[in-house]
Image (cartoon, rainbow, N blue to C red):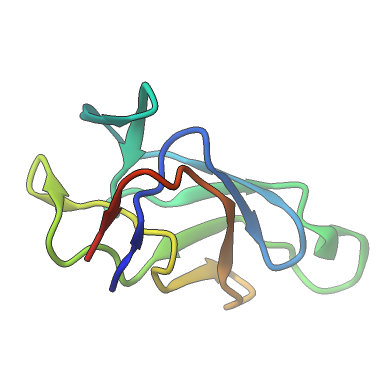
Length: 105
């Protein structure tokens, strides 16, 4: 799936505006001086708006589809248009901002 590489400084949110933080970074590949995010680790979600209603809030998010052509340490890197899912809500993560210099398939 084509898209811009997602790096540590990218803004990623759950579908309910909770801030998602990557847990698997690649210091070997950097964009704008920051490591890119690997598909192997989930994002930790904090501040999901569902915490204020009876439904359980988003806790983690995982990218199911990442780059098919670019890897680091043998693992696919996350691209901005990759497919993702949050647990336990089954809604997607949203890449709001990321760098726009490097793209990948």
